[in-house]
Image (tube, rainbow, N blue to C red; front, side):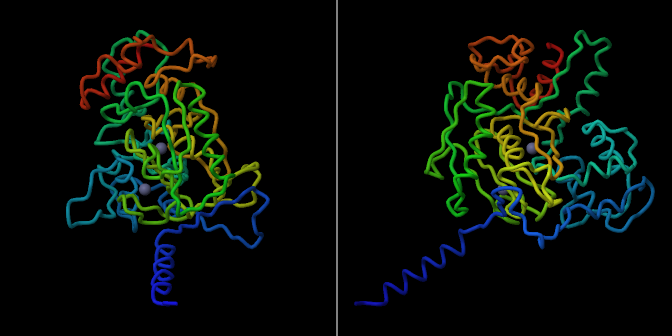
Length: 370
Ligand SMILES: [Zn+2]
Ligand SMILES: [Zn+2]
């Protein structure tokens, strides 16, 4: 027997295992915590030290807060080959004001307690402002100011990505698959199935798991740190997950989180416990074309506290997804009557949108049509 091929084979297997296997911290239920498991704290806890800081002073480490705001679209990129300064400058004050508008906080431009407490919450890695354009509260308020007298009382808060990307007209079913290297259990896969079902309930879209990872429309995986898409994960809490707009299909979760698969996450003993289904429902919204919403009850709100469950689509989420894909004829939710009138031939897309640059204006105009 020739032993050489066996050695080579064993080497290749071990190589592929070390490169591919990513062990996510998945807890089948909340009772499986080990008492010795100590919380590691949030990735942004150091920002709590900036409470009370204001324009005109310099604070050690403030550059890191600028990086945070840059990451989520609030702060201009640092000039090439230079770093952010620790100065509390006009640009930072402006970023804070926009952030405060988007998160329904008092617009002071100061790092008051409520603002800092919001900043350090775990959140989605997708930016609130993309290509310098915010469609959350801040932009809506500015746009509202240009109208002397809004004709309608109800304003939509859901947002779409620039250019309003969606899955193609006529799409009835999207397939999804799990990164094979994660080796996820059926219980974990079932959580994602439940999350997809919440969006399927209110639209005519269907979702089906497939074994073909690279052939699937939506590809789900748990990864740690830098995983090759320029959006590295940051360990416990901080950013929890991110997903790409249609029709990219990539859905990544931070393997370092303490993901709760089942049970009452609100009663878990672990301060860093994160509800998997809640995050999955949110990220699927991105995969289908929704951006972040300023409505705190909406699943598309950017932050979610640890030990919190939020899986039920709010009226704002439903209005957003039905704007893109139309409603499910079998869905009798209360929002059906408030959904916009739409021409069946355009699949629910906004007729006034002609290109990426007009997307935001079209959305804001649309807000007055409810
Ligand atoms: Zn998000
Ligand atoms: Zn990623």
